Image 1 (cartoon, rainbow, N blue to C red):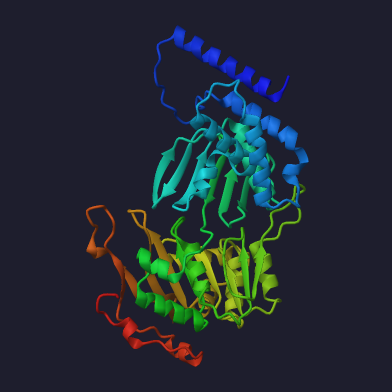
Image 2: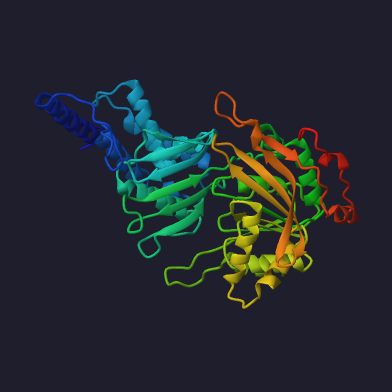
Length: 463
């Protein structure tokens, strides 16, 4: 039986079953809820075409000599031939939709592929095969897309993680990975995920945001942006802090863009996301253990190794464990101008988190010694918050001053003004304003040849 005949038979069977169901029951619309598959009248047809294409194209789908554009052209031509038959009753809109869905399955990531192509989305969240959410303009919304079943979702997850040399299975049911464009991927599969595999994709723009974009969004003001540029060029050690989804990586990208192009930069990440355009950038990525539980390379291992690579700057995507001790050591041993991110709720909490992570290293250090290391190493904390309206704003630019007794003293240089309230659309009117205080490290900036206009710190509206 030819391909066209097999597909036509499958579709006729589907139509007959559908007609029989309509005759025997009153037609009604059943809402799709989490855990229930969507009723797709062309599911069998789509599955048959997909299977036939994979069989006919075979190894050519994985030919390393084929460029992505050549592969796409080949698949779409084969798909056009497979779908161009008259035995299946179908509108042109249905034919176009099925063609696109099958192409997305073979070339991309199935039903979530259209959302990954949408530049206006920042996150795609799959809560099992039948429940997909997106984040648009900081707000969550559910979409109608569905995977065919759990196996379909698992194939998509396997395709993503395999491309970066990672794996996910019952012995290792959690994985961090990335897409070719740098978007961050996290997947959790059963038995840890009870209602089906979970897939979370934090999208990153192919054209990364620049400082002017952050000013346009209201995350920064021209004055605070000028000040942060001076701090980076003046080789201050900076910690970017904030909660999940606050925009820390975007801010880290922007701050890193201020690093002079004649310096040697080493970036260290769990999944490579940073997009630096300087000429001398060395990118390192951690590695999980293999199926035998061996071969893992942690962030801490990479920070230690980076010290032997003659870096001018060390940029760590996220410090979340004992690597905090090695990062502090790097900042305190001549690697000025290093930048990293830390999860925390405020600048003060940032220092507490670093203390806790240093203790995770298992070193029997007195608390005062740890705090002295932090006060000596960190010059500036840039804290970012995701507000209730979904916008991501830098709320504190805080100087880390010195030890006074047992406490590290902090001084806010810029603070977000929440008193301006919200507009009629619920958007915050607040902005980052100067406190009028002049940071103590201005002399250090001068010694490094960076001049800062004192009017940046004037209290006249936060422009």
